[in-house]
Structure formats: C-alpha cells, structure tokens
Length: 189
Image 1 (tube, rainbow, N blue to C red):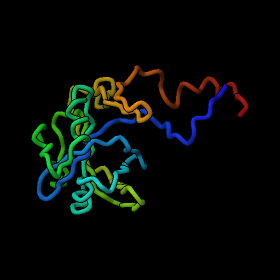
Image 2: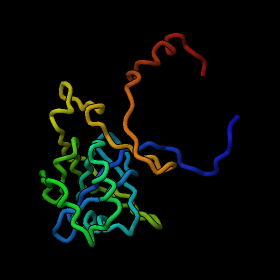
Image 3: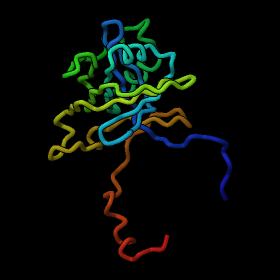
Image 4: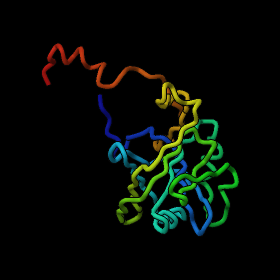
C-alpha cells in the first residue's frame, strides 16, 4: 500500500559538485547538489540568492562545475558550511584555469566542466543559472577508451531526505538496450 508523504521532491540522489567562480578577483567554491542537465551541452544550477558565489557568476559570466570523488567528502562538505566572504576555500585545493580564465577549476576533482553563463532566471529566493559547457577536463585514470567510467570517478552523491552523502552503486545494464526484448515482444502500453 502506498503512503502519502506530502509534497516532497524525491529526485535524489544527485551528484554533489563544487561550483567555482571568480569573486572579487579570487577563486571561490561552493558545494551544490541542485545541478542538472538542460541539454547535452548545457547545465543548470539552482543557487540561493544569499550565496557569495552568485556575485562572481553574474560579474564574469563564467563558472565551473567540479565533480569530487568520495575521497573529498570532508572538503566538499566544508565548502558548503562556510562562506567565501569570510574563508578562502580555494586554499584547500590546487586551482587551475582553462580557456575562460575566470572559471576556477579544482585539480583534485576527477572531472571538471568549464561553463559560460547563457541564462539567469530570477526566482524569489534562488538564481537559476544555465551555462554552456565550453570544455571538460578529466583525470586519465577515470577514463576507459576515452569515456568517463563513473565507477572510477566514485562521485559523491547527495540525498536531501536523509541529508546524507552516498556513493555510486554498480552498473545494472545498458540504456537503449535492456528494454529491447520487451520492444520485440510489443508489450502493450
């Protein structure tokens, strides 16, 4: 029997990322989990208007999305606990820059995406940023034949319902393939 939970968003787990922006001439990072795919070449982020990082994204029109592995759980959590107004969070990481020059990236994260801001949507309490991925960087150790193997990335996942960090499970099958048997049988809708 189904139990009603109220209006709860259960689109979790989500990857936990470190969003980077140049704020007042210095690199800054914030922990985010409300990051999504708009289309194959664009990402979206929902960020409270109170965040210091928003200022840098708006000023420079650039940001980075850094995907930490589970080994960076403490550092990632810390970046969500303190404000860049008071703490220099970039000191914890080896920071590098790509083509955009104002989107700081984190060397310790196995995957980094450098993004150019294309749209900002003004919600009452949040800014929704949409960015075009200009370049993606990857540690060679997480690639299999040039493709990212997320088991090797070991991404840090976040679930709001239990406020917990989780790790990735095993691959269960191949998309656009495992349902072919049912398609061949012409299972009615």
